[in-house]
Length: 113
View 1 (cartoon, one colour):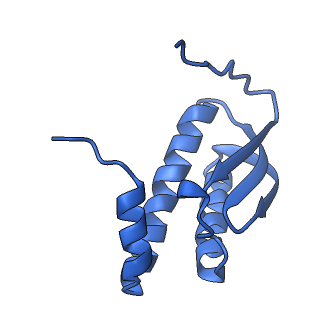
View 2: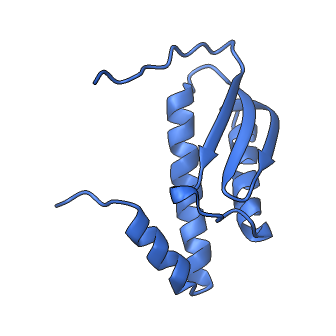
């Protein structure tokens, strides 16, 4: 099956939705929402995106953004997801929340070595 390719246009606005793993309600707590908002803010202040609006829901995030030159949408989303995932895991590790950590470890497939 051919892979769908986005025709990236830096002049366009994009409505982006990203969902927590297995649609789990991981974004309910204020500390986790803060991680997401701080990551969006970082992308904005580093001039990766022009951020127009966002909303954090219990299991997903919506935002409207324009990617700035030299920051294609796919690369920006990859870096955003990678960074926020690491920060959320660190938060749960700091809390010793073994239940959520076990869920995340089981839910995310790891490549075989």
